[in-house]
Image (cartoon, rainbow, N blue to C red; front, side, top):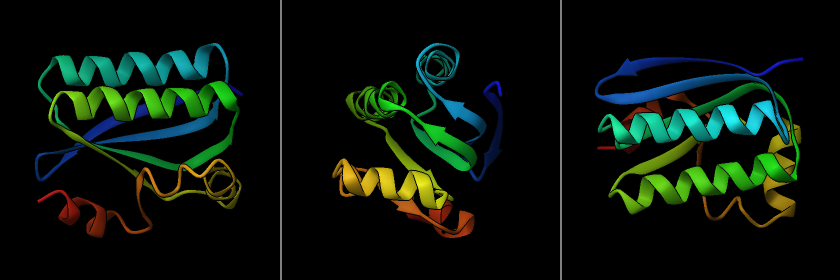
Length: 114
């Protein structure tokens, strides 16, 4: 299953809807390129909607951390939205759940950027 993404704007927040698998190769490259592109265009408030992401491997986790660092270094903020149980458990196991600001509700996530 290939990685798909779409980008939309809500109240000045860039929401990236991801679906598929964030794995070594196509998935992680897509996330990396998209976040870098958004930051280059001046987007500093990014919300990654992972509701349709079925699997993340170690390189995918690395890309999420890298994306987070890239956005933070530019003075921005990156949050995660709608984690599936699998992804939620993975972030708990890797202790990254405390690093990312994770939201379950899009409206609350958008409001949290203000």
